[in-house]
Amino acid sequence: MNLDFNSEKPIFVQIADGLEDAILTGAFEEGSQIPSITEISVTYKINPATALKGINILTDGGIVYKKRGVGMFVAEGAKEKLMEKRRNVFYENYVKELLAEAKRLGVTKKELIMMLEKGESL
Image (cartoon, rainbow, N blue to C red):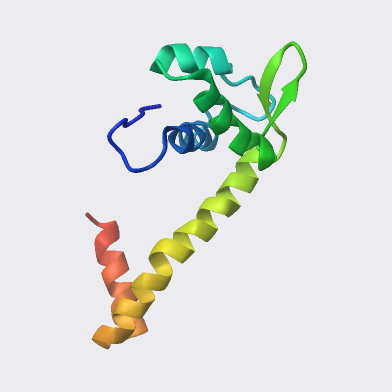
């Protein structure tokens, strides 16, 4: 996980996103333990409250859960929840704008599909 301290995105959001990425790529499988708040704060030299805030995003979303006295663990079904969430964000942030721009330019569905297929070969 890389944190960009010059980014406009808050550090706690970057922590949540980084852990989400790790879950999606299989670095943290469902049922496995994630780094503790202390580990994250020491590794990245950040305030533990910032690390906690990032993990709380995942806890609130049902992605991780706490085992008292043991640590934080990836919840069952977390990967599927994250996939659904990211797909919705992808649609809202990219696909809708792509379709709107295609419409403004008069790009047909067939042309758009051809452009996408061309991009796959890059």
